[in-house]
Amino acid sequence: MESQEFRTRAHEFVDWMADYLDRVSELPVKAQVEPGEILARLPSEPPRSAESFDQIFDDFESIIVPGMTHWQHPSFHAYFPANSSRPSVLAEMLTATLGAQCMSWETSPAATELEIRILDWLRQMIGLPPAFVGSIQDTASTATLCAMLVARERATGYAVNERGAAGVGSMTAYCSNAAHSSVEKDAKIVGVGQQNLRKIPVDSAGAMIPEVLDRTIAEDLESGHTPTCVVATVGTTGASGFDPLGPIAAITQRQGVWLHVDAAWAGSALLLPEYRALVDGVEHADSFVFNPHKWLFTNFDCSAFYVRDRDALLRTFEIHPEYLKTRQDSVATNYRDWGIQLGRRFRALKLWFVIRSYGVDGLRSKIRSHIEMAKSLATDLEAARDFEVLVPPTLSLFCFRFKPRAIDDESTLDELNETLLHRLNDGGKLYLTHTRVRGMFAIRFVVGQTETEAPHVKQAWQLIQEAARSLVTAEPR
Ligand SMILES: Cc1ncc(COP(=O)(O)O)c(C=O)c1O
Image 1 (cartoon, rainbow, N blue to C red):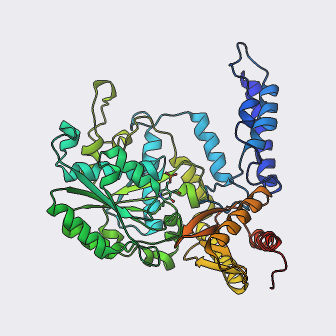
Image 2 (cartoon, rainbow, N blue to C red):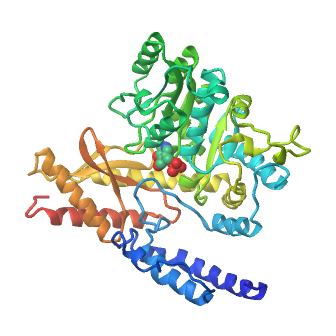
Image 3 (cartoon, protein in one colour):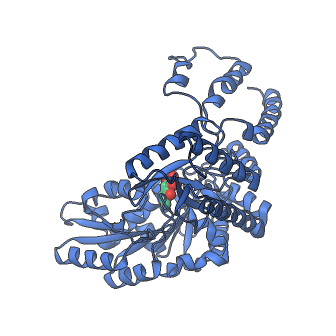
């Protein structure tokens, strides 16, 4: 593609992008396609010769866009959000254009130094103490993996890195039984093993029970295991539980075990001083992750990972092949040594654009409004006699179910709510997902999309009531 055509196409694309963001609310939020449908429309072999750009773009519009679930739709209330914003999208365009690979200071000095600065801004914004130093990872799964690797190395005197796992005996790690599945995946990868990941029970609010953690670590020590890491969750995925960091940190400090805090979603709420009590004790954690790509208006992927012991992190990951050595290695930050991957994208740029475009106050007011919308909807649900709030919203997630007065049988209620969920999602006007709460099928409702406003949430409530009540006949209200 020549420069002139690039310019023309780029302008057309920007128009398309602006139109898309303006009209995304009119599209079905969840892709209305069956498995294999898109694949069948894609040629099974690559083109031998160049195709016209018009044809490629037509196919994007006719095949790809209808096959997308629209995460930026204001009625996306599923999972956790992966919200973005116009300043972030524009910054991603610049990142793609620069096409830089930011593995070391020398390969991208500005990217490295911007990342240092922005991660410190973020640290201040969420109230972490200055002892924490940060880097950007692709996802929370990777950040937690990094934390668990450093924890493993610290617990084994860096023996696994040196000699492999044979000879270090069996290692254990700990999380609550409501922790995200990424912790289990990471336990497999770091060599702890699924069976040695102790899943500590939670209390009725979904928070890890510290006394059981303490006892379990003590028993493991007694039986000759090597405890490596406790992963505490601030804002569990299923039902928004908050592990008590203070009591957990007291245990990890006493037992000499690494404490990693997974605040993938809820971390953004720490911008609001009124929610900082949710992480009382975080100053005693060893590492912390949260995802600006979830709830801080920054395009996926962008995960902020903090550690207190930078030396332990570097000692775990640093490696110095001749071809990577630069003259600045002794004085500059080389982020390639802060995690698993060598090559790194320039992700700090979009954060810089987002934080400066909104300002901290602007970000706070958006997050606060999401929480208020969730709380207000939960109040409406509570007031309706045929709905039940199963987990109230501490932040912007709550869980509920439809419970007509005439139905008591739990399995019938489960089936009814599952049918309700599918009916709502197939309608294309909103997207919700589910979990289990105390054994019950529960529908999750999360407010977190950048463009979500009160009328979207009101409309969602209307749709939920209509769909639910149409499932049962002659239900007294
Ligand atoms: C608490 C928690 N931790 C980790 C993750 C994984 O996030 P990522 O997709 O960034 O790996 C999620 C995803 O929703 C989550 O809710």
